[in-house]
Length: 382
Image (cartoon, rainbow, N blue to C red; front, side, top):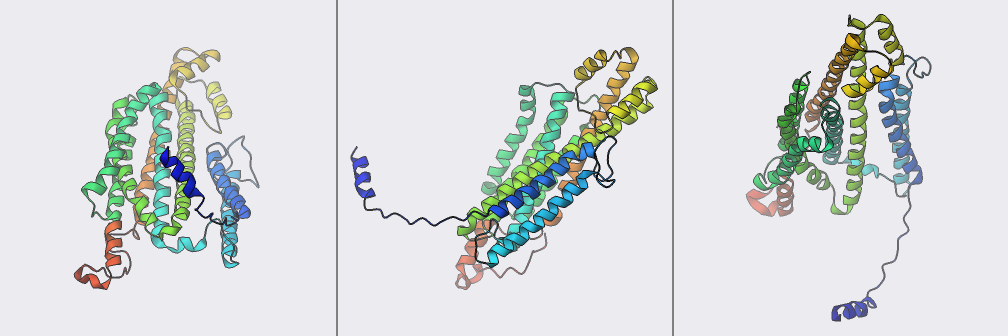
């Protein structure tokens, strides 16, 4: 009670801080929303409409798929957003994204790494539950238990690397994490075969979790340390944007590849199967030309039963669907592997010295004797 009274008395002596009017960049906000939403929507529709050539029965613009126009329009809008932000900065107004913020190479690369990490992560997490819940027909609890080792490996690695290896090179840790992530996803590709059970995900979950944990242990510190402390809120906004955009595009891109591969494999399998009549194969080609749904065996069998398709023909269609699902999953995980393997080529500007140690050396200055650090003349070899 005494503490409460003292607080109330002291509050009278605290001077109010004058409010500074905040100017929201409405034009920049609108341009960024339109640009990113258009690009993501275009990628999402690519499985149904096609990337460049229009799919049968789908919309088209000037003989091409609307997807290419959506992505091009989104990129053009993004360019207008950059021009608008630069104009605001030059006229002394407050832009949504200060253009000078991205002049820092370390920050740019860190943001790209965040984007790539969440693109890969979202793509894998989109395809993996389809294998566990649709193909293997596991329950939500069983699926969660199979994925749980990933969470454990991620937490242990993210928390353990800074403690066990405090002097580790952020660049090297990120590269090792990406390679580990690629190996784990590659093992998933190899395991996606008819007859596979839930055991094929055990080792990949540990490897993928360790890779993601290695990235998580470094990227936050790399981006925040690239700019002065007062600009940390701007860095946080960039990180959130990169992670959200990466997750959205990862889900859309990997999902598009999965459905496209599934559709191509299923339609080709129906055409080649001797047990499937030409009438059924032709009907499926017409009705499912845009995309083939990712369904379980019981769902497909129920649909076939409603259509009056039974016996050897129904069994052949189920087998074709089973093989096509694995083709789609392999293509999706393989795309994630390719993106992961391409990402290390952008890690060159990442710091080679631990972020905290490098900051301490720079603060010591020339008076630090042999402990002083030389000016950064560019990325050192890995």
